[in-house]
Amino acid sequence: MSLSVLLGVLFAGAPPARAAVPDPPPLQAAESADAAVERVGVNTQFTDTEPEHCALVPVLRSALQDLGVRHIRDNASSWDRGNTTCTWVERGRLHTSRTVDILTGLAPKMRTLLIINALSKISQAQLRSDDQVLQRVSRPGPDNDILDLAELMDSAGALEGLEHANEFDLGLLRSFRIGGVLIHPWVAALRANVVGIRKAQQQRPALADLPLVGPSFGRETSYAGYALGFPTTDYQDYGNLHYYANGFMPEKSDDYRSGRLDDAVAAAKAASPGQPLYVTEAGYHTAPEARGYTGELTGVSEMTASVYLPRMFLGLHNGGADRVYLFQLRDRRNFGPADQESHFGLLRWDGTKRPAYGAVTRLLTALSDPGPAYTPAPLRYRLVGGTDDVQSRLYGRRDGSYVMAVWRAVPVWDPLTQSPLAVRPARVGIELDAPEAFDATYARLQDGGPTATAPKWRAARRAAGPIEVDLAGDVHLVRLTPRP
Picture 1 (cartoon, rainbow, N blue to C red):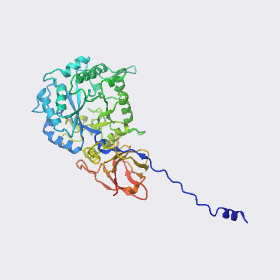
Picture 2 (cartoon, rainbow, N blue to C red):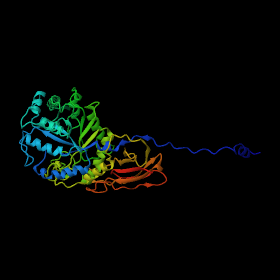
Picture 3 (cartoon, rainbow, N blue to C red):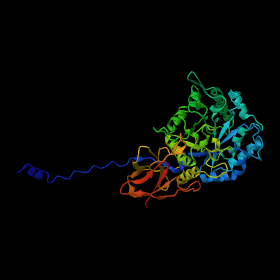
Picture 4 (tube, one colour):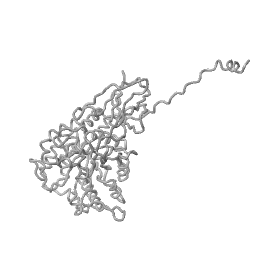
């Protein structure tokens, strides 16, 4: 008998070799969709704007309600500057009363984080002791009603927290270098400010238990200078970050057109160890001409802002921010195309909507799921194909459905040439452990322009394997709905 015949006889009854079984997708946690809505706010600046603002208050209220945010950030300062922002507003308590009317009119759907600016940027050099700050924010009288304003808002259920000084490091006492050493002359005044504000808050029973957010800074290097040798967490309950990507994409990557999101979050957290982090300003201005003129930041096109802004706060949530306040609802003023402060708004100066307003509204509409606190079940899935720049965040809803935000961290704008970049789509698959259990639809946040409030859902492409989405630079939503 030949060897081949012998081997055939011996192994004739052997079972065929088993094909390798792929590992199932990993079990991944989902955030409550409605909790994600709670983590988004917007800057309104009802109390710090030009006279023309007053006629648009009804428009702004309507725009806020349609936007879907539940948290706003506004400003209180010492009204001893003769500030008359509206024809029916006078100095002092009349101003306070009207401010309360505006902000409390939004409650209970929206509550305010109120900045306590005891020190104007002009008065930094004059007020250096915490007792002086305490007197400045606490003395009675029509010219100084900062904490009176806070108490009135709190009694109306419109206040949810206080915030220390805004970008104090960009005042008259700016940082400078001597022999390569960075000097921060504003630190002593700011520390006096935060100590005085905390004392004043604790002396007011109505305000004593409100959370107090730390000061914000205009420069990343300022965090270390402020916190060095100073017990920051004794005088605040939350860290604070302002994040502007200066015309670059928000995420950090190896591309030279990337932002510094990870670095900025790390700097802010180092100055507030162990505390939650609020990003109280995050945004882009749409005045490319401002570069090299009055602007301190590089601008982007309106369409680019509508792509980058949702990616910015999704990326900040992925990076560990507890809430992100978009900057801002409406342009603060109308000083022309070379002024950056005239172009930060989701709304233009005249109240018309920019494309970013629609993109943010559609995202919040897709996630809104009000009700009691809810912890969604985790989901087994993984992303396949595509490229290594794909990022995602998974949200669960009370009806058992899921919404996944998925995008690529790629630039769509070149801040150096001030021109858009073409991004070739990459096909990304979402592999589910039990694909037969869900119907899949998807929507692009870019679809719908400035005014459409609801996403335009379409049937997702499903071949024999994963759900497939072609991603360029904008955010796609994938909705997984349980089959009956």
